[in-house]
Each structure stands twice: as C-alpha cells, then as structure tokens.
Amino acid sequence: MSYYANPRDFIHPEDSKALQALKSIPGFEQFAKAYMKIFDERSWKIVNMSSKVRLSEQQCPRIYNLLVPICEKLGIPVPELYLELDRMPNAYTSGDTTVFITVTSGLLELLTDEEIQAVLAHECGHIVCRHVLYHNMGEMIINGTVNLLGLGPLVSTALSVAFYYWMRCSEFSADRASAVVCGGSERVVDVMLRLAGGTTDVASEINKELFMQQAAEYSQYVDGSGWNKVLEAIALMHASHPFTAVRAATIHQWCNESAYKEIHARMHMLKAEGVCPKCGAAVNPGWAFCRKCGTPVK
Image 1 (spheres, rainbow, N blue to C red):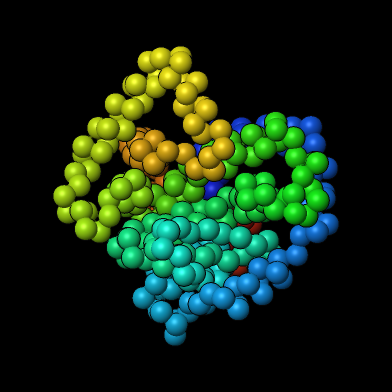
Image 2 (cartoon, helix red, strand yellow):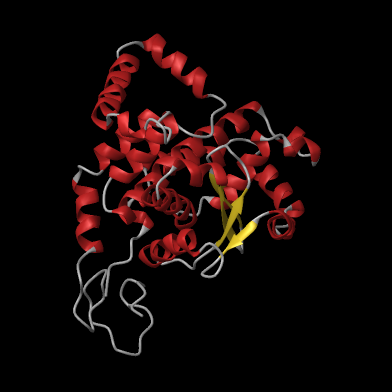
C-alpha cells in the first residue's frame, strides 16, 4: 500500500498566509455570501457538455489515462476532464460539489504527455488543497463577471488585489503537488520552460540549465534593488499567476529541501499489510480509514 500525499505536507506557507489575509479584508464575507447566493455550477455543466469534448477511457484515452494515477496518488476522486478548442495553452479547474478540469487544444499541441501529466497534477493540486471555490470567485473578479452579475460594488480595490495575490500564492502549492506526483521538479520546470517560450519547434534547442540560471539572475536583480521590487509588484498587481521563471526556481529549490525528500520517501514506501501507510499504526482488515490519523487504508 502506498502513502497518500497529504496537502498539509506541501501547501506553501505563503498560500496559507495570503488566504487568511484575503479573508480578513473588509467586504470579503459579504462578497462570498453574495457569490454563494447566485452560484450555480449547473451552468458550467451546460457549457461543458454542449461545447467541449469530455474525455474518458473511451474518448481520447491517451490523455484521460494520464489523470487517473494522479488522483490515486493524491487520494481524490477522478474529476471530469474536458478538452476545449483554444490555441492558447491553458488548463483550469472549476466547480464545487462536482469539480472538473479543462485542458485546451493549445496545451496538448505544446506539451509532451509527461508535461501534460504534470499540468494535470498541478490542477489536481488545486483540488486537494481546496483552492477551487475561491479560485472561482477570483476569476469572476478577473474577467469582470462580477459587474455583469451586479456584484461589482462589493469588490473593493483592496479585495481585488488580495484575491490576485492569494491566487498567485496558491500556484506555488499546486506546483508542489505536481512535483510530489511526478517525483521531482523536472517536469514542472519543463512546463514552465515551455510556457515561457519553448515552443515545439525550438524545444530541442532550449537549454534548461541556462533557463534556471536566468531565473537565479532575475532573483538577484529584483532582490538587489528596492525599486526593482516595486516594479515587480506593479507588474504582478493584476496577474493571477507568478512569473514562470520564478515558479521554476521556487519548485526546484523546494524539491532539494528535506520536506520534499521526506514526502518523496513516504510516497514510494510500501507498507506492510495491516499497517497505516501514513502513521504506521496497526489497522484491522475491515477498516476503511486509520482510526489514529484518518488516512484511507483501502
């Protein structure tokens, strides 16, 4: 029996801090309550079923089967997976009681199967870290839907900025989930490199080590000047994702730390029958969960 990755082990500390700061912004509670009153995920079901391709073991199984082992490793149900016609490489997760992942045709054209799996693991990371509902709320602010639904007056500048900041921080947690599933930072870094400009035509010419060196030089450039930090903050003010080079450097560094190495070891450690794969406590054959720590044992 393999260890289930626990999100408590890999949620980025800035993710947790930013979420608490977001919830403390005046007006957040009112906006959240108003959102929940009008929120109906059936509208997404209508759009998905009518205009996208739902993938399965029978429909484009090559891509769908990349998702299933990810969910097993993270201990979550397999969400619905849709393919959307869009030349821009992208993937996103939405929903609440029924969560779904959408990947674009542009993403499949740009990435290898291994890199696509890293992206799917990233999206599943958002699910297991319970980001999705708040992401849905943040996306409404980003795309202006709040104005169409009459919620605009509830969204202050401070609330908008806080949503953007938390969404960026949440990406670091999802990157960690992807690294945990994929066994290290390599595939996540590969995805960042592709998204930064490594198209299929020039992929063989791109040097990953030089890209990581570029990321390190960027960090030194920004950290070495207070004004450069201000300029970076301005550039990111309305961005939902961190810069790709920063994400590559951040995940590479984390995967060289002891916290990741401990998770990696547990993920690949087979436990003896009758022992909890998480805490090592004895479990009875008929138990579905460990009665000491709650980990699934079936």
